[in-house]
Amino acid sequence: MDTGFVGDILQRRGTIPAERLEEAIALSNERGTPLTEVLLASRGMDTSAIVQALADEVHVRFEPQIAVESVPESLIERVPITFARQHHVLPIAERDGVVHVAVANPLDLLPLDDLRLVFDAPIEPVAVPPEAIDDAINRVYERKDEAGLAGDREGDDGEELIDLIDMTDEAPVIRWVNNLFFTSVSERASDIHIEPGEDRVIVRYRIDGKLVPRKEANRGFLPSIVARVKIEAGLNIAEKRLPQDGRITKKIRGRLVDIRVSTIPTARGERVVMRLLDKEKVLLDLVDLGFARAQLDGIERLITRPNGIILVTGPTGSGKTTTLYGCLNKINTPEKNILTAEDPVEYELAGIGQMQVKPKIGLTFANALRSFLRQDPDVIMVGEIRDQETADIAVHASLTGHLVLSTLHTNDAPTAVTRLVEMGVERYNITSSVLGVLAQRLVRRLCPHCRIPYHPSQDDLNELGLDTAHLEETLRELRRAAATTVLGDSEPAPPLPEAGDGWTFYRPSGCEHCSSTGYRGRVGIFELMYIDEGVRRAILDPGADAKSVQRAARAQGMRLLREDGARQVIAGVTSVEEVLAATQAGEQ
Image (cartoon, rainbow, N blue to C red; front, top):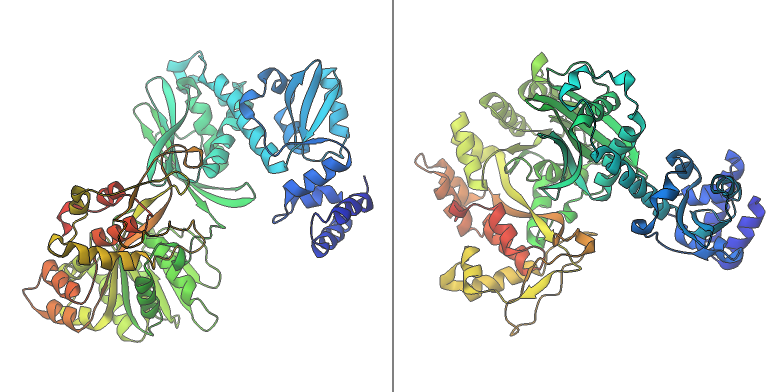
């Protein structure tokens, strides 16, 4: 079908705006490719509406989704996955001698002619959006490969003697590994763990901070699986005795994903962990992190100061780097020279000079920071202050007119002060250079589709560590803060109950939207400490400890981590259990 025919159909039906159609036609003519192919591959197009319009024109049935569970394996075995992917077609059923085939382009008859020869039967096309077909292809062929790799394989005990060149099951293993990447992105996983067991290979995904078992394969396929990952990561497949690190870049679901690969030898074989970093990830804006409005305004005031140190604290995996990136994005303008020293560089930020430290060759945080001062910077981000040398240079940089952002591994904001003192930083240097300290944790967000409201018991309120002597007053203050919770483009929090309705919390349930976990995504809870006059006096006291600094900060209105967690509970964003798991009992 020519460009004019397809264009006329879409224009007549008003399927897409005229200007978008003209752009697609121009691109089709420039590339010499069919207009339908250009339209279905274009990001931002309503491909479902396009497919439905074409299907209606040629009287082909339209279905928005494919019931993957009902697709017969006998049909799949006769169609190579490369053919299915290339032409966006998938046989989905056979009734009364007629094979029903899902097609993304109901005007393309050539692949249907090929399938008619393959099955030696009449073909009935069913129009389905290309994204649904791609998803079904991966899931159906994955199911087929799972069955193959779950079966027995001879030579399980002699894996070192297997020659990779002689393996006849390479294609299923390649598809199996590729489906690891595809399904991990579909399920929003941050890490993939491939672990050798006694008789199985176990695959677990880290989703919203929790490891979840997802796949299994026969133990005998471990060398093939590891070798495939190593080949993609550019590692040495012959080296099985030493740890190796590599990197893979893949385009998955139209998004560029950077995959950091780490392999280590264990008693049962090599273990692989892959960290997935979405290069086009949007969650680099402060408004998406879950601050209350007052906290967000405070952070934005701090990062627009011309000089000083801002510290973000918390354990590994608490989202410190994401917060720092959000700060940099907020102040990244052509007028500012921003430099970062990171280990490793997780996301590349346009307009910012990012350096990866390499301690093995002497490029430490301290050396990087020292060299930055000769690069005329306005803002410097240091991945972590680990020692006195780095801390002293950071203080010097802030006192000479630079804004320094960095992280510390402490449990709360006041402890950051005592940590710097233990490193050897003078107390007067801390009070004159540090602007504020933000402690944070990540908690899982309740699934908005299935969360269940309930009235909390007194035990629930006590566990959140709220001031029992002034409980109603504390709850009302947290309710006011909860009403200002900023969640950017994320799912909105439920409306807060009216006064007199009692306090309403939410607990997880589980549905198809959250894989029956009750949670979907994560959000932050925060403890923001400003270094104001009262806190300065507490820091300068030679006998002051973290508790003294905390009392001074509390007197100025600082909320503790668990109290801010209570704010997110009242806002309906997370559950009591999540807050208790993320905070420590002794921090009150």
